[in-house]
Structures are given as structure tokens and as C-alpha cells.
Figure (cartoon, rainbow, N blue to C red):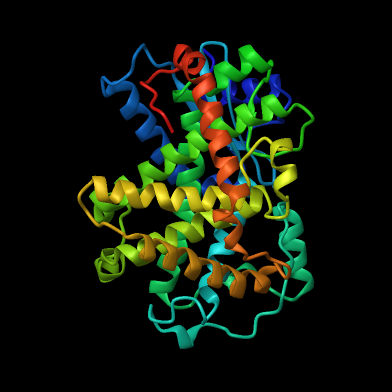
Length: 377
């Protein structure tokens, strides 16, 4: 009988993505990898057995690809679905999160910030972990050098990485749950949905892809907000000493936005200008961030937990922009564009409306493939 590992390897090879991370790989011994995988599988199984599906939901195999580059995919194979993440995605996100909390400028009120090294050299960001490691080695750095020394700050770094990867896995699951991958396979003849926002000359397909990407973003952000505020101390398993930190909903909100930003910056950049937006398969990353925080703040109010008014939301967005502008140059973003003003320009709002309109145009077709009831964006 074919094992899940063999089936996953067969599936990813069938669409030309490469091979599965071998069972004997040393990375398989790192608890983080197995914990993320188990976390995703548990929640997917909860959807399957929760009685909320419109039709029987097939099995979903979640596993890692043997690649140091950043990458994530969702696709159907035979009678199952597959969510595949490159191992480099996990390692780079953890490295960046750790590096941020090594900086004394970030959240100085948490832990003993004076224990952190304050003179780490600059190193460039790359979406390839082997290049990342080689660059660190050339600068005389070891992995331990960019790990926060204070345990509370290390926990915050782990939280940011966890949210980034939790968001990515939930995003990929939504591509399956909401019928995106089946729609794309039937309508666009795509073997898989990739998170790399490549330019394309087909503007109609691009806008439909952007609409599905925004739906996946929205779903995953809502799952994170609900999980944090309802089951914060249980699900995320953080030390009781940090409960005051996570009881501060504005701070937790800020950490989530930083996590989203790190993820989007690995998969995309902020450089494209409005005329180029339609030539890409994903919404502009700055637009994605502002839409996510706005949507999450609304959800908080609906849940009756914490209501953030417009000025509070704008303050958190501005604060995150300042932090990223201040800290990401330390890890290589010397030309980071922190101009959030474009997000409320006519161009930004017009593009968002185009995404919403496109979603409405494909809504009925997506519902034919979806395993859950879809709702307007």
C-alpha cells in the first residue's frame, strides 16, 4: 500500500515541482517542522469532520518540499489535494523573525532588551536559504548570533514566525476549500496555484487570480484573529509570563501585521506602480496588508472582543510601517518603500474595487467547486 509520503512525492513530481523533503533529512528532526505540519492537519481534519461542508471533503496531504527557496503551492492530485511548502520558507521566516527581535529598537518594553547584541552586521535578504546561510557565513555569523538572547523576546520571535506560517498554510487551505484550485484547473488549465506573483499578459486571468488570493488572505487572517483572541493561551501554548503581552490586543495586532509583512515581502515586493497591478497574479503587497488589518479589526468588533476605531487602526499601520522601515534595512531592505499613503489613494481604492467586482463575476463558478458556502468579499 502506498504511504502518504510516497503519494505526496508522486504528486509534487507529477506537476514538476520537485521532490519531497526525505524522511532521513536532518530538518525532519527539528520539532518546529513536525509541529507546523500537525497543526495544519488538525485544523483541516476539523473542517472535514465538523459537518459544515457542502459535500464530502477529500483528504489533504500537507508536507515539505526539498528546496531551500521560498515557495508554497496548493493543487489537486487524483482523489486528494496537496499543500506543499518548501523547507526554505520555514527557515527564512524564523531567521528573519529572530533577527527582528535581536534589535533593541523593536518592542524595548519586552524582556531584557539590553541583553541583545546591538552591532550585528548588515546582510541582504534573499528568498533562498542556502544563499542566506552563505552570506551569514561570509560575515562571520552563525545561526545562534541572530537568535534573541532574552527568552521572552525569543518567544515573541517564535510567535511572529508562527503567525507567518500559520497564515500561509491557512491561505493554501482556502485555495482548496473555496474551490480556487479546481476552478483554476478547469478554467485556466493551471496544474497548481503558486504564491509567486509573476507578471502575466493575460489581465483577465490576473484579476481573477487576485480575487482568489484576496479571498484566501481574508479567510486566513480571520482564522488567525479568531484563534488568537478565543484560544490564545491554549492554542498558541505561550508561557504564562507572556499573557500580559498577548492580552494587549493592539500589540498582538501589530505583531500579526509584522508577520504578514515579512511573509508578503518574501513572496513579493512593494515596487510595482498602479499601471502594473493588473499584470500580476496577486494584489500589491501593501494593499494586502492594509486590507487585512482593516478586515481583522472589523472581525474583532463582530466577535465582541475589542473594537478598534479608525484612528487606532491607522496608528497600528503607521507604527508597523515605522518598524519595518527602521528594522528591515538591517536585514537588507535598504530601499524599503514605507509609503502607505498610496493605500488610500484613488488608484488603491479603485484597484480594490476591481478585485471585489471580479470576485462577484466568478462567485457562482467558484461556488460550484467550493466545499463551503462562499460569501461576498
